[in-house]
Amino acid sequence: MERRKLILVGAIALALATFVSFGIFNILRRAVLSGKDDGTAIVVAALDLNVGSQLQEKDLRLVKLPPGDLPTGVFHRTSEVVGRGVLVPMSKNEPVLESKIAAENGGAGLPSMIQNGMRAVSVKVNDVVSVAGFVIPGTRVDVLLTGTPARDSELTTTTVLENVQVLAAGQKLQRDANGEPQQVPVITLLVSPEDAQKLTLANQDGKIQLSLRNPLDNQEQQPNSVKNSALYHLPSAPVPAKKAAKKPEPPPPSSVYMVEMIRGNKRDEVKF
Image 1 (spheres, rainbow, N blue to C red):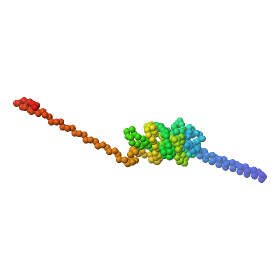
Image 2: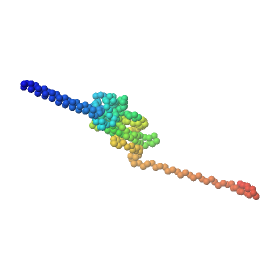
Image 3: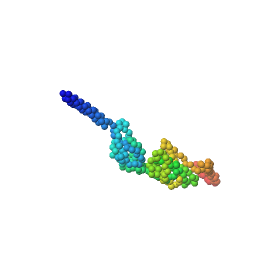
Image 4: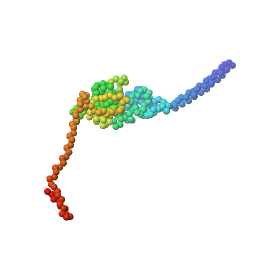
């Protein structure tokens, strides 16, 4: 009798435990399913990404964010960005945005960083020209030219280009992580086609110098050219005075005299 009671109590306990477990399972299942619908999947960097690198599947992953917190230009599938080049350094878990990568089929490396209508031009530099190696990718510079204009024998320095973006230092497309200078033989600048011609001509016509700008200073000042006489405080050559134009002399008095003779209603002029 006692055994039957034990079996009955065990069966009831088992049934109750099964019922409770099933209820808990349903609650957890609904929570998981509701959690899957909470948020929108976007593409983020799975690791730190450098400028010029070509995105691969291993570089990307999907995370979910609330729809109201999504930045502009996000992607929702990794297939939309695989194969495109990185234009801006990205940290791990940073959203991959349209503005940070090259256009589709734009490739990777330096060509992908050149916007439509712009050109990349390299110039030879040394420690002095590159401001002791601190002209690095991402900085902005002015290009100065020192030479002798054809119309003037005096040595002159003029600002050829202002606020030009540096694309690369040597073959490096990004700056040193610690901000250290980079000693390189060439600097690549991003310029318009017209400025590319000016830069090439300046590189052949005289000696160029790069002037490093503060990244927040983007105002073009168009400074006047400076001649070497300005360094020695020499007086400017006097401007020759213009000679006053001679007034035309009056014609000499005529030696012919006219006499009018009146005879009745007839008039005659007689010269003497």
